[in-house]
Image (cartoon, rainbow over all chains, first blue to last red; front, side, top):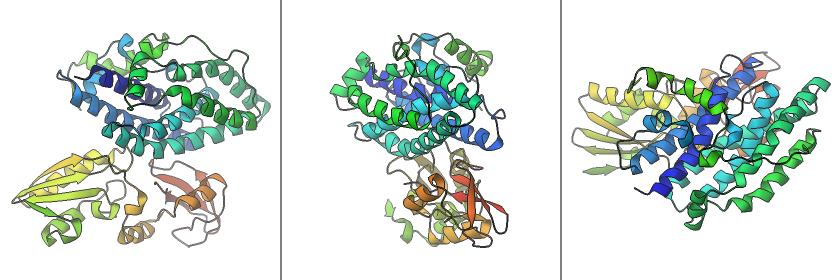
Length: 250
Length: 167
């Protein structure tokens, strides 16, 4: 098995999976019917992308892996998502800011992955980019509405930005796997995306009348498997059925 | 092994494919929707290549199952393979499918530029499928399913779905 490629698929898939799970927690709890439907639709898109990545990972794995075993039967340290996506929902402002910070990166990443030398990854990216553009539009619009809205919505959006912005640095901290994939032409050189990412999001943050936090980055090693305590709670819920009824299927 | 283009498939096969509908939009057959990418016929064995509309579209599993069952009812054995490339676009919805959408109360996709104007800048260009007025407003970018946005007509006041352009 090409272990590096397998690990890379986890890095790509886990972000969508954990964020998709966070959004699914809002099903029936969105602030309005329209936003509830929108957020869970975004969740569905992300889960669809995860299935493509994990079906591919299962195919190249030596052992008897399936998309489900990859999704459900790993321990915390084996998940490769960035810390941003596992942060709690807290309130609608946190949900939107987290989504916005992720979508801005996700769109750039997928644009690069479309050029991947790996045909399957390229196909998944061609498919996903169309969906992610809608997500970015949605979260960007809402960021402006909240930031440029009432005193209360502005404060909540600013608080969320102060807390979540420092996690964005992790997108660009290349793990050994990502460096290897970049060298092989399978994944992008993340450093190239950094400038575009910050210039894009800073423009929208400014339009939203929000200011950048003083703390710009923090230590984050999610891609290496070191997570915040949030992931433990997520997995407790996510893996409940598989732990209670091993090998169950729908 | 007969390698057949969709247009030149035997009538019986076309009829079976026409009978399988999108469970979310039951007036659209899988052919109208453009999700059938290839059909290979080998005696009673039918190998179908199916492409998803949206990655997470929950209808895909249902469609694959419906295809197998519909072919089984006519004593064929169908296998369904999911293909991702090339990625589905709303351009693949047939003209017949677009008409069926309007009659069903869904405005078919208008195009990338139109979507930008309507969904981002709020321009009144999306026609109401009931009274054809373009005096309409967007209620939500995401509608009852991921592929649709929710609109309301300012003239007849009816809400309606708009099938978003996906390219």
